[in-house]
Length: 286
Image (cartoon, rainbow, N blue to C red):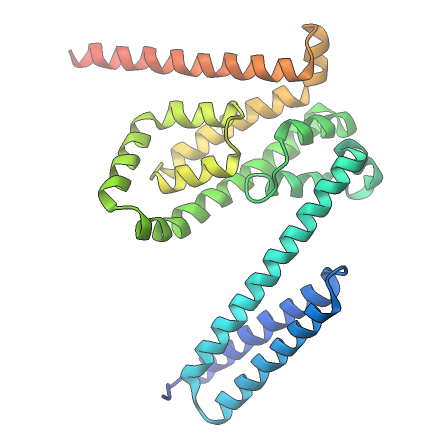
């Protein structure tokens, strides 16, 4: 089967194939130093195969088949990125466990703020590190104000990215496995209780942030409300975690006890506030 591409479309198509294949090869050969040589050879062979078939389909004007090699190149790239993410997340967790996050920042003092920002950004997406560990350690290295501002910026940006990933990518996947009427009921419930639900989830460390973002994105929570709740909640938690050592000394508590009490107080405050507002609205309607 043949298809007609304009010169511009053909150029962009080939450029996409070359870019994906090149990035995959760079990842396998240069960015994954511990990967077995046999897997590198398989990756190189697959890349050569993709390029060869691209040229073959181009010579035969079988442009429709270029879409097949594009799909293969995309999957090839996605697998390499998945391996890359697992490798460096595991390496970071091992380094953090071995040296402690605070020492890790001190060892890379010149780039410490960028490392901290990147880690805070990755936490709500793929990095299973508790916020209290990163913020408290950064506070000891940079001081509370810098730890709060940089951590808040990185975490909030990561939360927003994860929300939109779930909002625009996850909805299609979930709709294939969940009945539309059940999904609608869930979205209605979340929308009625979204302020209370999201605030408690963000402040009290019951679920990871990525799960909360996915639930909000799939639950139909508006971005404006989600952003306000996430921003206020993360500003609160970042401040508490950054000043955790000082506050623990003042109140003669361990850091863990301080986190627990702060989360409980914040959660109770949100619940009481929401109940008061709900009662006031019911009285106004009556």
